[in-house]
Length: 211
Ligand SMILES: C[C@H](O)[C@@H](O)[C@@H](O)C(=O)COP(=O)(O)O
Image 1 (spheres, helix red, strand yellow):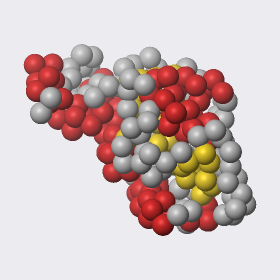
Image 2 (image 1 turned 180 degrees about the vertical axis):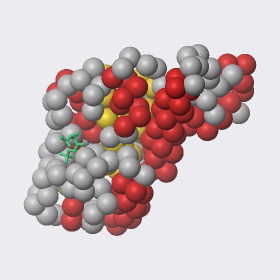
Image 3 (image 1 turned 120 degrees about the vertical axis):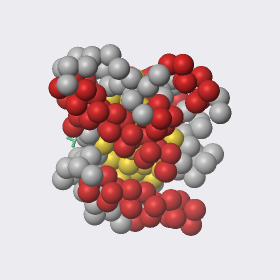
């Protein structure tokens, strides 16, 4: 791993810790990846790794063709490496992918409810949410469907499974991931209160995204 990628990996490892503290992934659930902007390879967490126990040795380096670099360590890449690879192929502007298991977002989606955006930050960071049906982890179908959704959404709910949040850098991808789950929790509470349609005012939507 070159120095630039090493620096990004240590920043990403801190995000993994935070995500676990927030309950967005349990045990070895979830996987994270990052690349140096413009690079044709990315570092992805290893299969079965706990996101709050990441070190440089728990990452694998994979190129955009799917070749795993074997000169660094014997770490096997996440079972979801194709999800990361296909998303980077679909979005050259994206340099970080955060796959977590946020419970409110997944539950609402499984029950057929749309996650609504209520606050300025939900609307600004999340903007829109794509979704996929359930496909097994590591499958071509999951990787391809999520990458197709990523062409028009920065946040995706993977049915009965988890989420994928993407961004030009680690901070933006994580802001999107946590705001999507906060919006999902707010939607859940709104439904408990009997509200089925409130959300961030459309009148302010345009100015928000063209500011
Ligand atoms: C069954 C896995 O936990 C699945 O949910 C996968 O998507 C995941 O989050 C972690 O898989 P890896 O440890 O292979 O990254």
